[in-house]
Picture 1: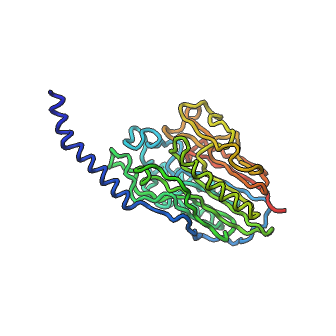
Picture 2: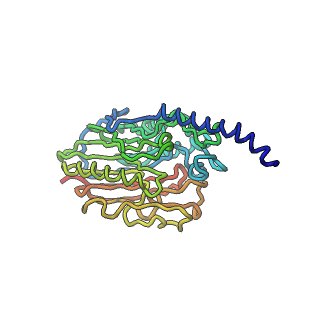
Picture 3: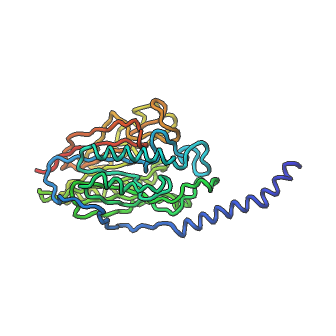
Length: 363
């Protein structure tokens, strides 16, 4: 009797109000949902003086900078409690920690020699990183590099965790930042196929690949692809749609005689690589790219001695936090892999660590 007395007002008042709240969120999300074109030409925001690639040895660095919000001190509510509530995890990392992470990334960019930097999760203006314009800061740190930005996450208000509207993730504008010593002849954003189920789709990333073309003195083009494949993808179902698209894009360029380099956060391990190489699994798993997915001669390049990603359901603790390798490169058969090395940062500035690739091209 006592339980029924209190349950009826809840069902009659609180539950309908909550359902109306969720309905309003979904309608608003549908009305403002960003729908990018399948192909969009990217205009560089910063120019390089060099237009022709003449060096036969080139170095690339790929790094998911974690929008400045996922350094070692941080955890992430979506990795922990999920979309309903934050529990003890962070929705937005405190500003001093975000500034520390961005400062660390800037020092790395300024003090590391490379011809290309392929960065993922670069915020243009987002509540999660306190509206700090990271892309502008990274461009300024590389003043002689051509710079392009390909958005893959634009939402005026991400309303999760749903049970904490006062603590919502908020506005997000983020994407892929590509920086090169050479001026691209063309840069294009290609929308990747595959969608999350509704209603999650309204507030998730619109994954893409940023393709850059650089003329070389050998007549062929150097084609550089900055990628960030889907996360939160049980069974790799969405990646199973994205990967064939990337394969066809890469093979088409190689068939033209071009040198092709793909680098970024694949959100899966290379072929044959054990996801639990660095630490015994604590329940986390990670899929692999099938070993026969690319034709003979295509080479996956990675440093098997260092993890590139740590899981963010808790702050980082060496020996306890699960680590794996999901950031690496793929190169076409006409590209020579000279060296690959990861950078051990103890995940101080991001939940990912950078990896460098040196290649050889030309006759």
